[in-house]
Length: 516
Image (cartoon, rainbow, N blue to C red; front, side):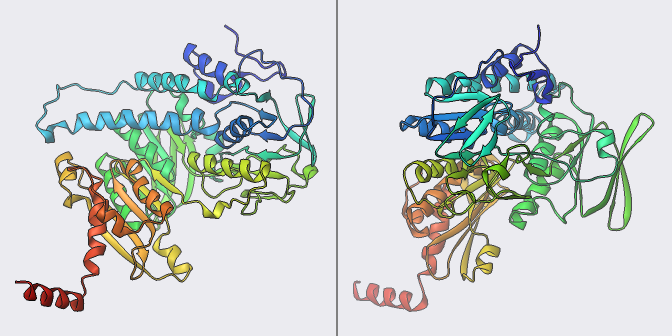
């Protein structure tokens, strides 16, 4: 069967993430870039032209169309962007399978005997991932957005003036535009890497066989998540990180717990690595680096680069539109306006928060500000995030370093997972909650949670911050027993105990003596 082809010459087979080009992937591609698609004829001036069909672009297009705007959506490759195609969806499918493998491996500690010979069928793991991706893809499909009233154009969109975009030989005129082209994986300049070849998040999900020996370059969120997953599948995994420890942008105590978890899963961590080089020696691929002045060499079957993102600004004609950009992406103000005020930008192309939920939130700001004279500010968002290792690390708001930089005095309340009954019963005692408040008050500034389901749990803190509810309110909130979410109540109780000063205690004792 021939590869799906766009009338302008685009071929699905040209995308490495489309491999293997089996029936399931063809189904996925038919939703995200249908074969034989004919771009519509422009319908006069659009209220909003969106360039980029990832999360930010899809939310902006659907939201604007739902409010009655005339909208055009332009996508070069696949609708759904990184999240659906090469990010959140496939990675979390793999992580869930890896967690199942670890649960089977560790079942003995719960008194459950597992038959010998249990193994991971990596090909089936990848089949499941592709099935799930295909089943989710209709939500981001060209057909769905057309049904919402959006004019969907496939092709390379570029500005030809501050009010026009050209795509596939058609000129789209607009009163407002949103740049939502996101970012792509890029590799650091490591000698020999290009010659040997490597995987990124854009290609790793096309694997059909498990690499026996894998080096992961970078111990950030992507590197740690996939290193742990592949180790649980059975790969011999080495993580090489330039910084002194894994997850260098996270709370150091949280990062230390993740590092211990990786080591327990058999991952070899090489932090503080320098002078990284890659070379082919006969049939072997060798990765060489220095740690503490000592040279080390690892022989591998595959290399996964888990660091580096480059904004997708090339070929957009930003100069013709008067839109300023730099190495990090398109420059925007707090209202998400570019240097050409009626052109906006959202998502990875214009934000330090490289998350799907951030792209969604920013796109909603664009809709309000661009179409309805809104003055919503990106800086007002309360932004949580999560690294999906096992245990997970979730965070929202300020860190102690952020508070120090802003001159804000804080109190920090730390509650251990091991003190909670449900965590003990679940055998998930490795972790903690840290909540940072304004010094002497219960106003929550930020929090870090390390727990197996931290990503699901952190929203309780996020809602409290968004609503202006203090830590004392969490302490007064009734939680079902036993749940791991009781950790928030215990943090509230810890704050309440600080209010029992010696003077207050003396007053209580006097009152109670009088009432005997």
